[in-house]
Length: 186
Length: 103
Image 1: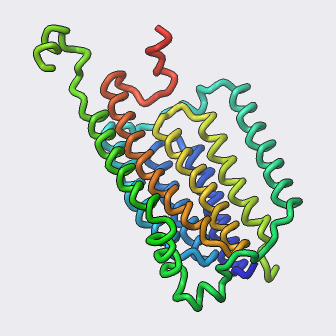
Image 2: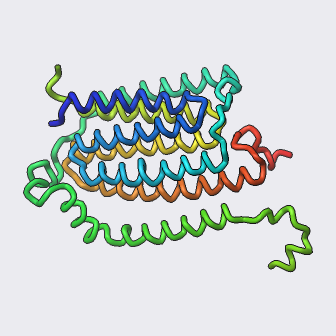
Image 3: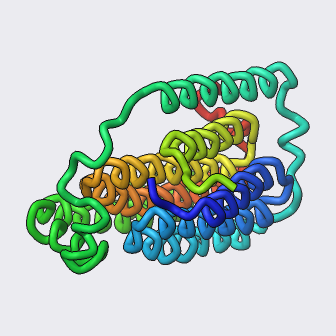
């Protein structure tokens, strides 16, 4: 696979380091900011892998929108005080979780290393994508021809998510009010 | 310096990130960090899609990533709405305190 090893290992090391910080920091705010760095490193890896549109979307949607939402909720709940939940979880549970992670990692690495993937059988090799006008053009042409229906359904999904999020978060302590008051309201 | 990055190295890197996310999901009790670990795992899966798309020369993987990013945005919006509703009811973001069905 033709990709720059220097940049790949740089971004990969960055992503691993910051994701470890994300899960081991006590303070949710510093976890969130480390996660932003992980997302930036992933965007770099996508760019190295010639997925330019995905790299841009990674920064816009993940590092931009989703993380702003996370940080906003952390500040809103003033939950940015350090929580000692890491030390409180049971030691055997922690050991079991880490053992499970290591075993899964070993199995996945073994599978990836020993399974043969037929390379370059598709119709979009690097040269063909270059000739067709670049990654973004190829993806947009696919999106508005072959994947038009899923793309349109995405808007329904987002609308549902917006309505759902508002309906869940906006509920005004209905269980506190008496049943009579609830009956009047409905 | 190695001049080439083998595909299995990139795939194993995404497996590492996935497992870090999984371990974090299991050992943390703060629901915000649990949601962050889910985002981490989704990102690892996205990287696997993009890598296979690059190996195979097929754009379907990158289209899938596009839709996964959309679903992840919707999921985190609804998830954080749930966190806010939970905090309003229980005044905590600790998953150990969520046992309303048990009592």
